[in-house]
Length: 367
Image (cartoon, rainbow, N blue to C red; front, top):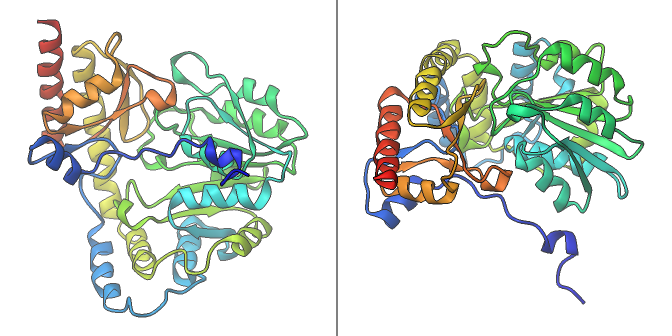
């Protein structure tokens, strides 16, 4: 008798970005530039930091299991009802909870090839079938291909907009016909973790689509623009019945008290959000241009990162060479892009350091 079910035994665990401390230990470097995990180079919201210090004095007490203050703050900020808001221990927990709650044995999860790997892992961990549509050229979601794969078995659809790790976006004129084709009892999860960094034309945030399409679940995070990745805090906006059912499944006290307090404060810090967005919009094209000058094929991005493909350069080798330079980026082999790297947009000094390190590494390889 096997120790675990086959769907668990076959799982390949999620590999996060390499921590700074680990790089320093293994490679004997200091002042590491970590550009692997799409973190905010400006750090946390100052208002959130003040709230964290205050909440830390009360961690002897269990958190509010209903996250009442945070849910109400989110509802007020987004113009929805508190009963439409769900918070979780990072967006990843909410992805897993949606699969656990709604996808039955024999039903399917539909998404795109090469998109955020957490969708596939969450489904596989529950022994559910994952169907992946092929992408269009230039790493774009193919919503028409996704539409053709819809079936009576499709229970959840995961779409990342902007996409991770590609940074590409699809416009409202593409999305609405797809939503019109989705059966009303199939939930469409629109993951907008990088919403605040979009500056391209035709984008429509998913909240505006919920009235016409009540089967839409909007997924967002405090990890990126708010700079709270280390606290693990995400949220969803959905129909009240969807929220209620997920609430029945989630673990008690899944969102800790410090994260809840930080989230409420971060929502009030419009200045930090504006500064974080401005930094990315200024540095993203500069980083992309610098990468192109080094011979990379760079995908136009709407996130706080860029995907750079270095033809003929195995991704893991380039990643390892940069670690020796004290620069951490993200190889994309697990996503099906063997020569590509995802590079977070850092502050100017980090971006310059990354480009200089790449120039040295690539120069050595061609010398």
